[in-house]
Image (spheres, one colour):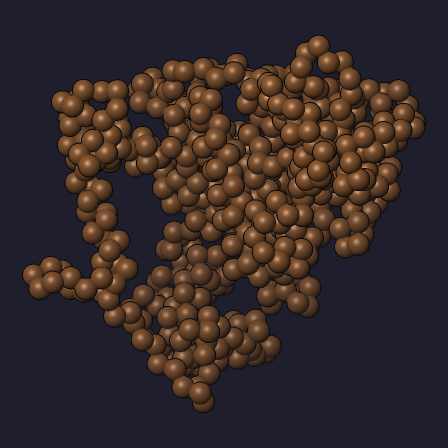
Length: 550
């Protein structure tokens, strides 16, 4: 038990004792006690007051509950179309706590006119709150992520100019609903949920943090790196969007308005939750992961703390063989894994959160596996969900039962390639763009996807047949370069055969029947409508919209 507690393996007993008996041990003990108390454990007398009895909100069969369906509503924010500052869209029933949240949200999103008057719906509720005063309605009185984003852009003129262009920053407002963010997507009605979390944090704290000062510095470094990486990614891949409110929008005015096409749900420590337009999600997630590591290595002092000295073998980690192959050196000890869900705007938020968390766990599991080969970089798992009924269980079961084919006497076929490393995501986006630029017929793209289930050779034969039928030699070479040679090369260098659209996972000494082949073709098909057609933009959005709807 003592050896297990001190994790004594290859080190001496004295060194193991010194590494364990630090401030980190005390912090871990206090955190465990805090979680036990928060979970409702009843402590003996002399300890802090118990929290075992959760708050009981009054309920009654004849009382109306609020929009959260948890507390009893105290009033309804009825609309009055003669007064644009009265009521709320949808006339929601609100409890006092939900009303306060709604008021703070409106202040943070600068929804009030310059008259500095409290909204009529709040005044009519006759609720009392010290914060609800006209003085607190000024923009900036409630800190918001968009305000912090603007402050970040103001640090450098170039970033500010690249994002806003010729648009005045004061004319750009916050998005008020998921519907408005979806309007900025290439395919109308689709958004992406991004959930990112840090890797190797617990191990680093346990081994490297020795005193309170180290904790403070570590916490500051991680938060700054996380926040800046998000702002850099948003400024790099997004631009303000002109939104035209319709009858179903929550805006009173129907005039066009410039909006920020994103919503930062939270940036806390090493956690990030965002809602962005669908076609930009993977690029944003990739940039966040890269910038997070870059920010932690931007000074010599940080390099001494967070630099990882070992080098990994890129050919063993990355399945993508592009022009710029990583060297495998200069890694950061800490990285980010990300789950990305592309879904319709009307997908229930709780369901989207559940699936995004599953994708994040899958990405972190992949990162943990690659860590055995000295790869400490980020990973990304994503899913394009065309309908809410697409997944009836969880993503793991959906992939293992629906997208993995095991036949007796034949190799195993995995009809998906996720999760991906950051470098592989870059290659996946390039390949998807090349598939679009090659003008591969849409019907044949979907036909190859359906033929994947019929076996390895059937899919290879039909892919080669359709590839040969492309119009020009340039289109054929583009697909061969960005897909065949970049993804589908056999692991054995002596094998000059063609595997496309498959990639082999065969290890040395594995029998042919026990080999596993996987393909990224399904992911390419899912991403196809969300890739902008750079050659012919006329009518492309309508085609993509019809494709996704069908």
